Length: 89
Image (cartoon, rainbow, N blue to C red):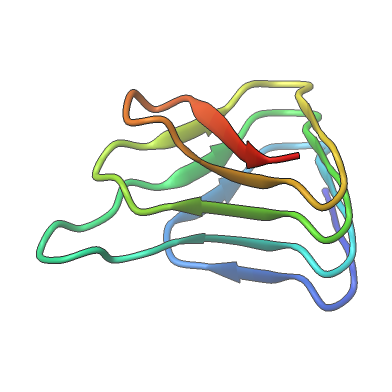
């Protein structure tokens, strides 16, 4: 996997093989209240565009499916069922 410059990865994050994460990307888990957040998992071959934010405040894991492509400057959160929801694309 390749992680771009100025990117931040925080909390419980798993990045699959052959992923490409652009520059200035934030991927992390956010503790919201007493519950421990689920992890963020990027499947194999995921492409994340520059300037993207992927965060999980849900107690469920956020699973980005293999070979998914997330456009630059997207904002992605957990939809409450463990799937990605684009707040802004």
